[in-house]
Amino acid sequence: MPVTHLNMTQIERDEAGESPLFRLVESPENSVTIRVDGVPVLAQPGETVAAVLLRLSPAWSRRTHGSGERRAPYCMMGVCFDCLVSIDGTGSTRSCLARVCDGMQVERQDISQGLRT
Amino acid sequence: MSRRVDLLIVGAGPAGLAAAITARACGLDVVVVDEQAGPGGQIWRDIEQVGATPRARLLGQAYGEGRGVVRAFRESGAEFLPETRMWNVDEDLRAYLAHRGRAWSIEAGALLLATGAQERPVPFPGSTLPGVMTVGAGQILLKSSGQVPADPAWIAGTGPLALLYAIQLLAAGGRIAGFLDTRPTGQTLAAGRHAARALLTGPRDIAKGAAWMAQLRRRVPVFGHAHGIVAEGGHTLERIRFRDKRGAEVTRAAKVLLVHEGVIPALHATQALGCRHEWDAAQQCFRPVLDDWGTTSVAGVHVAGDGAGIAGARAAGLRGELAALGVAMRLGRIGAEAAEQRAAPVRAALRRAIGVRPFLDALYPPRVEISDPPDAAIVCRCEEVRAGRVRALAAGGLTDPNQVKTATRAGMGPCHGRQCSAPIAGILARMGGSEVRDIAPGRVRPPIRPLTLAELASLDATEAPR
Figure 1: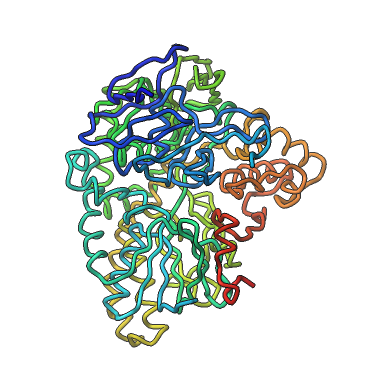
Figure 2: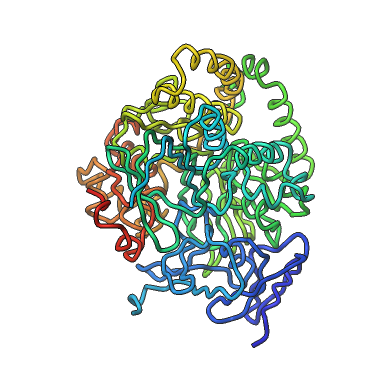
């Protein structure tokens, strides 16, 4: 599967014409690969999962369990809980506190249709 | 298997780090826990990785100052437990911790809560759309990832952080579409009576702020007294609407809107512990009642840093030192006289460090709209409860946040009321003809941080919470 380039200083629009909310100021020297909903994505070593999600298009982290609306990381410091994702199988993890590592499996959280087992 | 430690510090920001260094110098056995991967707190976030890079220069001197403090902390002999959550504390100061799937407890001779602040919740219609974030979030993304909004960003709010981030963002090569200054008119005049003391104690802070504002006005469209802010879009933010100082409606395309209305103490731990709190009228928030050593009304529990009332990083470090001296004195490691002697210069420095604060509090009050948001605004982001729903319940006679919680689930979601308690208190006060200071905050129950069932199950049965 091709790695999503996230080249990160440039803004690339996706097929729907949407573009990421954030971009990197400089191209990183090193990178690791994580998977977001199964898609390989490049990330800077040591950065937070939430930061990576904000450079993807569309940028979002979870759907609310009530209306199913999309939410994206909001506070980046662990108090809003809008950045909840599943990381390596552990659900409801705050992606703003989780650091990427090579091979990490991230899934955007959608429990609007009920919890999976 | 539970271990014992003289001092457990929660939070490795300026207050926690300074306290750890001072306590170690007094011979105390110290453990510091933090949810982050490294020490530094929010102000010095990722300082160990970023401190030596060009990005640190761009973030300014206050950021760079963290390097020396973090290095001294690392050399102090205090044990640091990163990515660790304190999710409960018993009255006898047994603290329950969790890290990556495992939970355990520590018995502490004293507990120092240095958990800092959070940004004041800013609910308005559309404020939950992806693309709407806090200014603090934007700054953290710049510090830790070196990233900026892809398109020109809108910034709306008040306070030193909004201004500082705007300057940092421009310096980093980011672009700003417009700055909505949300202060009501006349605020500069209102702050005037505190200006003399501010100029006396913090002339450099005042000069820096004025220079930032001048720079911003040169480079970015600034809208004074912006109000009635609304965010609109489908899956993500597409446009913002607001009223300018003349009351005319303005609509602009927007992809990222960063909001900020100041910061408030993070009180979950002190509330869960049943510490006494008082209303701070100048800062429009509750804060724990503390003595000169940062001791709360609960024996053995201390608070230092912005969690004790917003005063900034310099004051946080000094309060951390005082709390550590107080703990050392109480545990009998230093005499009362020696403690007072060592505390005296710290107290003097603290008075200087907070001298500018009354001026800032008066200059940057939070805008009224956020404590009395329009019906369409979601106040409880977790359970998607709108201001109108709370208002209708208040009109029906509900006066207590706990009643609102039972009726709507507001405050029951994963954030445990960290986002909704302030606006709900504001609405209840407005509707009931009372003041926010009279609205008792909702009950806070453990776990005060997220805990998986597997983590709970990993606890040794002999140390299970009572």
